[in-house]
Length: 330
Image (cartoon, rainbow, N blue to C red; front, side, top):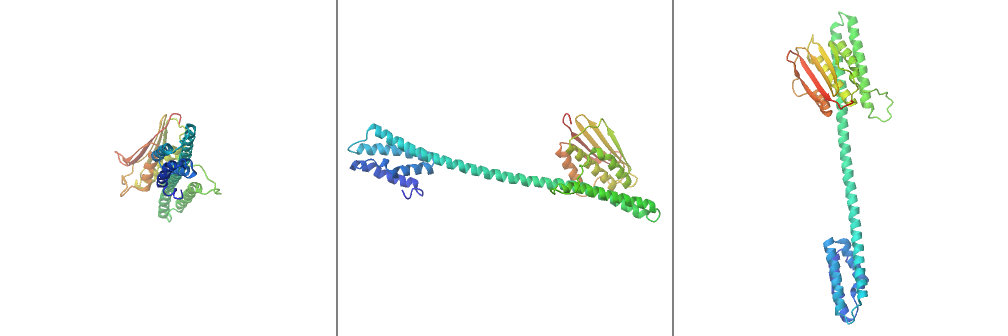
């Protein structure tokens, strides 16, 4: 019995010999003793169902065989009580085993859920970092491009036309402030209880201001809105604005002097179309690998199930166009 935890099956088999032979010498059945019941319980609690059932059957057969070898066999009622006791002890062992297996399964399930939660958290953090990187790139790239063009213009006219140079410097100051405001809006959400006043994210409704900003930067830009304007989901609204912003920034950088840009927003019941076209003679495509801005545009449009096209126009210049599907009622 002392070795039952380490070798339960071996200890049980060793107990069968005295349980069978003792009744033949007039000592009564060994099955009713506490050691035999403890060993039966241990096998049922620490071994599989097949071995446990075999042990129960062997226990009953051993008892019946030993009882038959004795001088005074047990009465039928006593045999029934002994067998019921064996079944009860066996059932208690199986219950403990099932309970232990259930607790182990709960532990494994909790561990799997914890690992899955940790993986989801890491994925969410990576997605948030990617989103913030896209937002920061769009804000910084656009405003820095405008400021660079304005600074170059101010330098050229500083001696000949100081008033015009001051206007360019004023535009640089305003653009820098707008960039700081938008960056605070983006980064401020990362700081709990940030005292910074956060404004709403830009959207299609802010395009007139963007167009005016591009005009001040030296890119003649016009805005055309087709269809009845209607509210669109916030994510699509921001994605459309960033696409137009990146398209205009690209035109400002690469279209060349004398180029003009046209922004078109077309509202339809189930879709939103936006485009940026310029007629500049500059390079139709960017050299080398696509920049972060173009990659960000593709990711934004794909995120909302949109279709993106960009490339040189047949009549000259460059075009960026996207179509966002909208659900009914949006």
